[in-house]
Image (cartoon, rainbow, N blue to C red; front, side):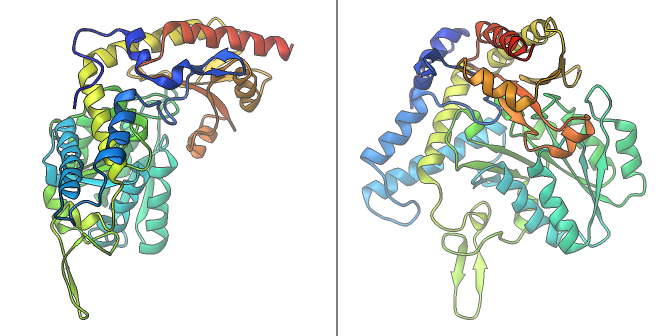
Length: 413
């Protein structure tokens, strides 16, 4: 499928023209969308791919022998090939799920209940999204594993001394950790973490919901055992996500859900399972959304992750510089390696008020604990505002945020 951008360099205005929603106005003002970490906007290439499927070839996949089913199945499985290439994985290692949250729950339920034994430990960090904390709490409560929390430093980076302390007794069987914090923007050193976990005989799961958007991911180079991400943050649709798992791990794991398309055979007495990835994909899948994810991968690949990463580094550096000029504004985290997410507080103004007053100026930011309530409390806050960037974000939009925040300060005296 062709996309709107060729590899001719990064032109943000040309990219912005590919996103129809950015032409919209909010409260009579030009939209400044700074909430891509929650869910990114969709380029025309993704929208067109999904509409084309619905208008010209939609049918259920893997089941029909007619032309439309075969064409739709080809497009659906073609998206799996694109994801596999995107992560440098084998296609049988790519499981389609609804989102990164479901992917982690799948691992917790299937791998966690069969490989992990009561008394084994799972380690997560203080900066995890709820999606990489709550499933392990549920496994702890139902299955008797121990859940350990590795600390972060005051700069918002993983504390390796504390990580080593957590692993010291040899009972840790899984390290489940973010690749990039959705609050602090911190990138974790995933290659080092994978080597560390493996040296202790543990596996590693990486929550890549944020990182996969901003930089190239090579699961083989990392030596990740599991890697997850969501389509809706990668300029694709909601309702589709990805679990990567090493083939030998997936082959040893039982199904997460039962039903159609995940079986080898069924009788009234017993059933047997299909090979991975299909044993984990029960029922009619998110066909249109999966094809949309494939189009989104085409789109970002056409831009190129080297260019995307350079653009977002420039945005982040600019944001940190200009926000520092606002009296009473405090940015959370000082990690040396950080991505395009900036959470902050403003003295005397609740984060919800910040977001509401910015919205009146056409500026969309997030406010709250960002599905990382324990981290927010660890940082001494109950709520923060967050600006997050995408391929379509401009320096001018960050300057508009600064101007908007100055107006918020004026309102609160």
